[in-house]
Length: 139
Image 1 (cartoon, rainbow, N blue to C red):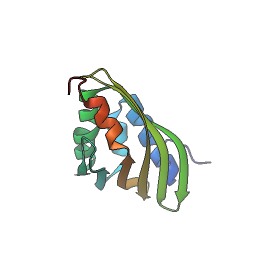
Image 2: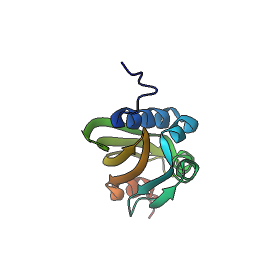
Image 3: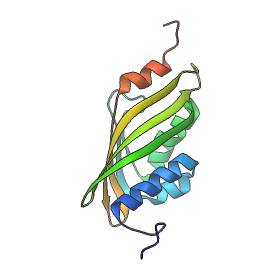
Image 4: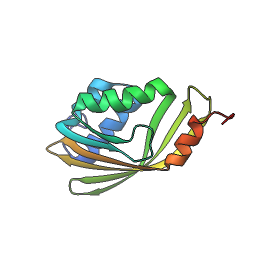
């Protein structure tokens, strides 16, 4: 039986990414990403865009989320696997540091895993809910 920590099965690789993210372990998270990864945050999301390289992903996404939100967590609830494609139905929970407003929003993530590494990621999220938590009450 393959050890979870070294498994190249697409769902295991994706699960290790979520666990590393939740633990704030960016080194382990980067180890799940291919050198030429394409990581796309949805248009309308505060960090919208496509980031490349493991360092580019963690510095432009995870580190920026940690700077703006307390306890940002992606809770991976359900996995749908089709070959190298892994779709995860998940939830984001966090509290915006500037406004003190919490979020609890459903998301879907599409990963492509090849050779034991995430080569592509695309986020689908209700960006209005995220922006609502970022808006001050005076606005």
